[in-house]
Length: 222
Image (cartoon, rainbow, N blue to C red; front, side, top):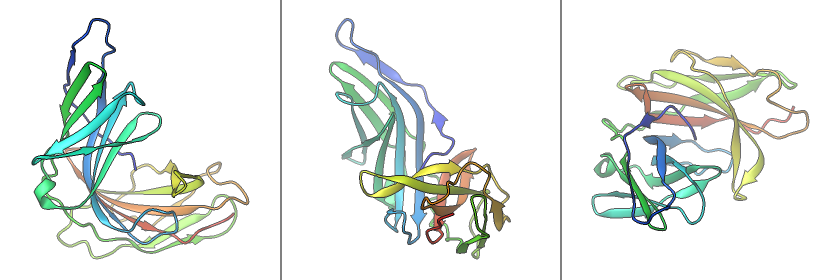
């Protein structure tokens, strides 16, 4: 779930002397079209808001507000707070991020989603070969009318986060939007462990992620 974000100016107000300042780093706002998978991620088209916050953890509270709706964000250690909502063009504008930690407060705005799109899923995502450095291959869907700027591949595995889904262990560099295969580098996979690969078709706006799709492989064990 991490791509290049936007660093915004932040206003911080500390109401009490000695209160610890809050800071908001990377802010992201994009749509995420997830296909069926065995990695534990729900298949859905949703919008995602992310904020990197310091200091993270209790008693820091993080909220996102837009159109009169105020939602709490969930912490993914060590410092990423996330909100997921079903994709809705009515909420494509910027979200105001509010931080509270005792008397200290901070506020920032996410970028808006200029053109929300349900990016189609890559098809026939499959592992080719055996061992700890196989290749991954896929077929591209029809992308007429969609502005896919790059493809990236991720590997999920390890202990399930919150007992639900596999964490993202590795993400490739940017591949051309025409790519249909990539090699897994040595050292990512371990013999006997269970992994799920994901292929991300990504639409960027001014260098930041705006829309993407995630298609998944069947589980693979070297």
